[in-house]
Length: 295
Image 1: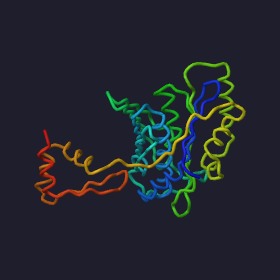
Image 2: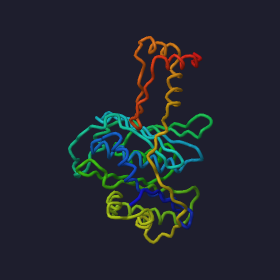
Image 3: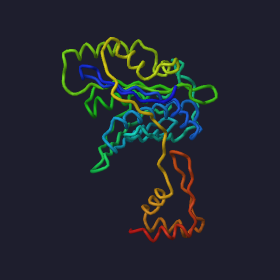
Image 4: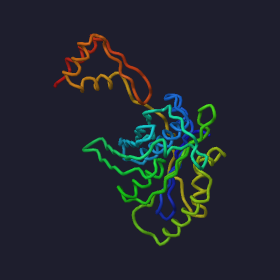
């Protein structure tokens, strides 16, 4: 089943639902980072969240999610935009841990204790940054806690990734349900129905593995609650690195540090964490960049 983000709104206007199938996207990330299963699960969940939350944003906005724990994975970072384009990396993609007590990939232990930072950049003005303590390291629970405490938006989030024995991704996706501003007499009833559905339905990765599309996932969550589909889009793993961007980064380090690299006489190579591309610069190329340094 092809990747898709599906957006729906309940007929009473009280709840917006986003369902995402991201199997191809997470497979692409696994190929780039050559990640082991627990790292693939952690990064895949974060990428799915980044694609959904990025798609929620205002025009040209970006959102950065950083899970910084004391577990062996280190930092997990993703950046998403309003086109549902997302990129990300995990500091140590080669972590291998035993399954947890539920027989699942132990993402919580792999990330450990620490903090979740959410940075929203609306392409103008000062970016908004929110930070909360990780409650489990399982990604979805941490984001749910963030929305409840930092943005005061009642939110249900589920994320899942299943990995094949050969490290490829069998299924990946998630959903986000948010209560809209304003109160309706039916909201409490809907909340109860959603809670019951979330508690009794199979995991979102299992539903996707079994062939459910975005609308079917939303239908399963909503039961007899009426809703309409607002729009759909295709999420993609996309890195926007380029020679020009790397040149600007080198210029930004300043004359002193750039001159130090030049004096070494070996040139330099810059690796992109998001797509694993390498950009090499000779001493002569660095000297030209030095001319553009202001400080």
